[in-house]
Amino acid sequence: MKTPDFSKMPKQGKVALFAVVFIALIGVVWLIAKLCSPVIDMLSDPVTQVQFEEWVNSLGILGVGIMLLIQILQIVIAFIPGEFVQVMAGVMYGTWGGLALCLAGCVLASGVIFALIRRLGRDFVVKFFGEEQLSKYDFLQDSSKLETLVFILFLIPGLPKDLLTYIVPLTPISMTNFLVLSTVGRLPGMIASTLIGSSVSNANWPLIIGIFVVVIVFALLGIWKKDALMDWAKKRGGVKKETGSSSEAKAAK
Image 1: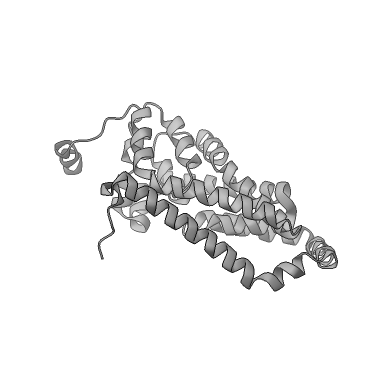
Image 2: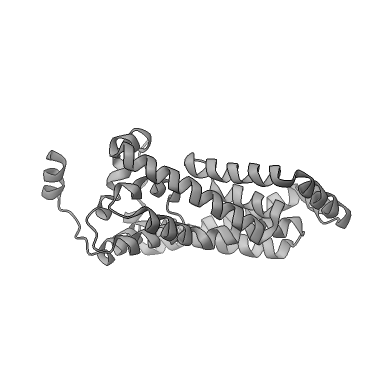
Protein backbone atom coordinates (compact mmCIF):
# COMPACT_ATOMS: atom_id res chain seq x y z
CA MET A 1 0.00 0.00 0.00
CA LYS A 2 1.44 3.36 -1.07
CA THR A 3 1.93 6.00 1.63
CA PRO A 4 0.13 9.28 0.82
CA ASP A 5 2.46 12.15 -0.16
CA PHE A 6 1.29 15.01 2.06
CA SER A 7 4.06 17.27 0.73
CA LYS A 8 2.05 17.75 -2.50
CA MET A 9 -1.12 18.71 -0.64
CA PRO A 10 -2.17 22.41 -0.93
CA LYS A 11 -1.53 24.58 2.13
CA GLN A 12 -5.25 24.98 2.82
CA GLY A 13 -5.65 21.21 2.70
CA LYS A 14 -2.82 20.71 5.18
CA VAL A 15 -4.33 23.24 7.58
CA ALA A 16 -7.73 21.57 7.30
CA LEU A 17 -6.20 18.12 7.87
CA PHE A 18 -4.29 19.40 10.90
CA ALA A 19 -7.48 20.90 12.35
CA VAL A 20 -9.44 17.67 11.79
CA VAL A 21 -6.73 15.53 13.40
CA PHE A 22 -6.44 17.93 16.35
CA ILE A 23 -10.21 17.96 16.95
CA ALA A 24 -10.30 14.18 16.63
CA LEU A 25 -7.54 13.85 19.24
CA ILE A 26 -9.40 16.15 21.61
CA GLY A 27 -12.45 13.93 21.12
CA VAL A 28 -10.38 10.84 21.89
CA VAL A 29 -9.06 12.46 25.08
CA TRP A 30 -12.61 13.31 26.16
CA LEU A 31 -13.81 9.77 25.39
CA ILE A 32 -10.94 8.21 27.34
CA ALA A 33 -11.67 10.53 30.27
CA LYS A 34 -15.33 9.45 30.25
CA LEU A 35 -14.49 5.74 30.04
CA CYS A 36 -11.85 6.05 32.75
CA SER A 37 -13.98 8.15 35.10
CA PRO A 38 -14.10 5.37 37.76
CA VAL A 39 -10.28 5.25 37.76
CA ILE A 40 -10.13 9.05 37.85
CA ASP A 41 -12.46 9.11 40.85
CA MET A 42 -10.33 6.49 42.60
CA LEU A 43 -7.09 8.41 41.97
CA SER A 44 -8.75 11.59 43.20
CA ASP A 45 -9.42 9.96 46.56
CA PRO A 46 -6.88 11.22 49.15
CA VAL A 47 -6.87 7.81 50.88
CA THR A 48 -5.94 6.09 47.60
CA GLN A 49 -3.18 8.63 47.01
CA VAL A 50 -1.68 7.93 50.44
CA GLN A 51 -1.91 4.17 49.90
CA PHE A 52 -0.19 4.47 46.51
CA GLU A 53 2.61 6.58 48.00
CA GLU A 54 3.12 4.02 50.75
CA TRP A 55 3.26 1.22 48.16
CA VAL A 56 5.92 3.05 46.12
CA ASN A 57 7.95 3.70 49.27
CA SER A 58 7.70 0.01 50.21
CA LEU A 59 9.42 -0.93 46.94
CA GLY A 60 12.53 0.94 48.04
CA ILE A 61 15.65 0.64 45.89
CA LEU A 62 14.08 -2.27 44.00
CA GLY A 63 11.41 -0.01 42.55
CA VAL A 64 14.01 2.56 41.51
CA GLY A 65 16.12 -0.17 39.87
CA ILE A 66 13.16 -1.60 37.96
CA MET A 67 12.09 1.84 36.72
CA LEU A 68 15.66 2.59 35.63
CA LEU A 69 15.88 -0.75 33.79
CA ILE A 70 12.57 -0.11 32.01
CA GLN A 71 13.84 3.28 30.79
CA ILE A 72 17.09 1.70 29.55
CA LEU A 73 15.17 -1.00 27.66
CA GLN A 74 12.87 1.63 26.15
CA ILE A 75 15.86 3.36 24.55
CA VAL A 76 17.58 0.14 23.46
CA ILE A 77 14.37 -1.36 22.00
CA ALA A 78 13.67 1.65 19.81
CA PHE A 79 10.04 0.78 19.04
CA ILE A 80 8.77 1.17 22.63
CA PRO A 81 7.15 4.61 23.15
CA GLY A 82 9.23 6.64 25.59
CA GLU A 83 6.34 8.83 26.72
CA PHE A 84 4.55 5.93 28.39
CA VAL A 85 7.63 5.02 30.44
CA GLN A 86 8.23 8.65 31.42
CA VAL A 87 4.61 9.17 32.50
CA MET A 88 4.85 6.01 34.60
CA ALA A 89 8.07 7.33 36.22
CA GLY A 90 6.26 10.59 37.01
CA VAL A 91 3.33 8.71 38.57
CA MET A 92 5.64 6.70 40.84
CA TYR A 93 8.37 9.20 41.72
CA GLY A 94 6.99 12.66 40.92
CA THR A 95 8.05 15.15 38.28
CA TRP A 96 11.68 15.57 39.30
CA GLY A 97 12.33 12.12 40.77
CA GLY A 98 10.87 10.51 37.66
CA LEU A 99 12.84 12.90 35.46
CA ALA A 100 16.10 12.01 37.23
CA LEU A 101 15.46 8.29 36.67
CA CYS A 102 14.56 8.82 33.01
CA LEU A 103 17.64 10.97 32.40
CA ALA A 104 19.89 8.39 34.06
CA GLY A 105 18.40 5.56 32.01
CA CYS A 106 18.64 7.63 28.83
CA VAL A 107 22.32 8.45 29.36
CA LEU A 108 23.24 4.85 30.25
CA ALA A 109 21.35 3.33 27.31
CA SER A 110 22.60 5.95 24.83
CA GLY A 111 26.19 5.40 25.98
CA VAL A 112 25.93 1.63 25.51
CA ILE A 113 24.34 2.05 22.07
CA PHE A 114 27.00 4.57 21.02
CA ALA A 115 29.85 2.22 21.97
CA LEU A 116 28.10 -0.74 20.31
CA ILE A 117 27.44 1.07 17.02
CA ARG A 118 30.98 2.45 16.86
CA ARG A 119 32.22 -1.13 17.15
CA LEU A 120 29.75 -2.88 14.80
CA GLY A 121 29.27 -0.13 12.21
CA ARG A 122 26.63 0.84 9.68
CA ASP A 123 25.80 -2.68 8.47
CA PHE A 124 24.54 -3.58 11.94
CA VAL A 125 22.15 -0.59 12.00
CA VAL A 126 20.94 -1.31 8.45
CA LYS A 127 19.85 -4.82 9.52
CA PHE A 128 17.39 -3.34 12.01
CA PHE A 129 16.21 -0.12 10.35
CA GLY A 130 16.93 -0.53 6.64
CA GLU A 131 19.08 1.49 4.26
CA GLU A 132 16.21 3.81 3.33
CA GLN A 133 15.81 5.09 6.90
CA LEU A 134 19.54 5.62 7.35
CA SER A 135 20.00 7.41 4.04
CA LYS A 136 17.62 10.17 5.18
CA TYR A 137 20.26 11.24 7.70
CA ASP A 138 23.37 10.88 5.53
CA PHE A 139 23.64 14.69 5.47
CA LEU A 140 24.94 14.49 9.04
CA GLN A 141 28.14 12.78 7.91
CA ASP A 142 29.68 15.82 6.23
CA SER A 143 27.97 18.56 8.21
CA SER A 144 30.11 21.46 9.37
CA LYS A 145 27.68 22.00 12.28
CA LEU A 146 27.12 18.40 13.34
CA GLU A 147 26.64 19.10 17.05
CA THR A 148 24.05 21.82 16.37
CA LEU A 149 22.10 19.53 14.06
CA VAL A 150 22.12 16.66 16.55
CA PHE A 151 20.69 18.90 19.24
CA ILE A 152 17.99 20.26 16.90
CA LEU A 153 16.97 16.79 15.71
CA PHE A 154 16.59 15.51 19.26
CA LEU A 155 14.67 18.64 20.24
CA ILE A 156 12.10 18.62 17.41
CA PRO A 157 8.88 16.79 18.39
CA GLY A 158 7.71 14.04 16.07
CA LEU A 159 11.16 12.88 14.94
CA PRO A 160 12.21 9.30 15.81
CA LYS A 161 14.66 10.00 18.63
CA ASP A 162 15.39 6.35 19.41
CA LEU A 163 16.24 5.77 15.74
CA LEU A 164 18.54 8.79 15.89
CA THR A 165 20.25 7.22 18.90
CA TYR A 166 21.42 4.44 16.56
CA ILE A 167 22.21 6.69 13.58
CA VAL A 168 24.16 9.56 15.16
CA PRO A 169 27.00 7.29 16.45
CA LEU A 170 27.79 6.59 12.77
CA THR A 171 28.89 10.24 12.44
CA PRO A 172 32.21 11.73 13.67
CA ILE A 173 30.60 13.17 16.84
CA SER A 174 32.28 12.34 20.17
CA MET A 175 30.46 10.26 22.77
CA THR A 176 30.51 13.11 25.30
CA ASN A 177 28.93 15.60 22.90
CA PHE A 178 26.39 13.02 21.76
CA LEU A 179 25.27 12.18 25.29
CA VAL A 180 25.03 15.83 26.37
CA LEU A 181 23.23 17.11 23.26
CA SER A 182 20.82 14.20 22.86
CA THR A 183 19.89 14.24 26.55
CA VAL A 184 19.33 18.01 26.66
CA GLY A 185 17.32 17.76 23.44
CA ARG A 186 15.05 15.12 25.00
CA LEU A 187 14.66 17.15 28.20
CA PRO A 188 11.54 19.26 27.38
CA GLY A 189 9.55 16.19 26.31
CA MET A 190 10.67 14.25 29.37
CA ILE A 191 9.67 17.06 31.72
CA ALA A 192 6.23 17.26 30.10
CA SER A 193 5.73 13.48 30.42
CA THR A 194 6.86 13.18 34.04
CA LEU A 195 4.79 16.26 34.93
CA ILE A 196 1.74 14.55 33.44
CA GLY A 197 2.52 11.44 35.48
CA SER A 198 2.98 13.42 38.68
CA SER A 199 -0.31 15.24 38.00
CA VAL A 200 -2.07 11.88 37.57
CA SER A 201 -0.97 10.75 41.01
CA ASN A 202 -2.15 14.11 42.41
CA ALA A 203 -5.40 14.01 40.38
CA ASN A 204 -4.64 17.40 38.78
CA TRP A 205 -6.75 16.72 35.69
CA PRO A 206 -6.92 20.27 34.22
CA LEU A 207 -3.11 20.41 34.19
CA ILE A 208 -2.91 16.94 32.64
CA ILE A 209 -5.29 17.86 29.82
CA GLY A 210 -3.53 21.19 29.24
CA ILE A 211 -0.07 19.63 28.96
CA PHE A 212 -1.40 16.79 26.83
CA VAL A 213 -2.99 19.20 24.35
CA VAL A 214 0.20 21.30 24.10
CA VAL A 215 2.34 18.17 23.56
CA ILE A 216 -0.03 16.86 20.89
CA VAL A 217 -0.01 20.20 19.06
CA PHE A 218 3.80 20.35 18.97
CA ALA A 219 4.05 16.68 17.99
CA LEU A 220 1.59 17.19 15.11
CA LEU A 221 3.48 20.30 13.98
CA GLY A 222 6.74 18.34 14.09
CA ILE A 223 5.26 15.53 11.99
CA TRP A 224 3.53 17.94 9.59
CA LYS A 225 6.62 20.09 9.06
CA LYS A 226 9.15 17.27 9.30
CA ASP A 227 10.40 17.55 5.70
CA ALA A 228 10.66 21.34 5.92
CA LEU A 229 12.49 21.07 9.24
CA MET A 230 14.88 18.49 7.79
CA ASP A 231 15.62 20.78 4.82
CA TRP A 232 16.18 23.67 7.23
CA ALA A 233 18.52 21.51 9.31
CA LYS A 234 20.52 20.58 6.20
CA LYS A 235 20.93 24.23 5.24
CA ARG A 236 21.90 25.20 8.78
CA GLY A 237 24.45 22.41 8.76
CA GLY A 238 26.12 23.73 5.64
CA VAL A 239 25.16 20.67 3.61
CA LYS A 240 23.98 21.00 0.04
CA LYS A 241 21.19 18.77 -1.21
CA GLU A 242 22.48 15.95 -3.37
CA THR A 243 21.43 15.87 -6.99
CA GLY A 244 20.29 12.65 -8.59
CA SER A 245 23.65 12.15 -10.30
CA SER A 246 25.64 12.75 -7.11
CA SER A 247 23.44 10.34 -5.20
CA GLU A 248 24.04 7.68 -7.84
CA ALA A 249 27.76 8.32 -7.72
CA LYS A 250 27.75 7.99 -3.95
CA ALA A 251 25.80 4.75 -4.12
CA ALA A 252 28.24 3.35 -6.67
CA LYS A 253 31.23 3.85 -4.36
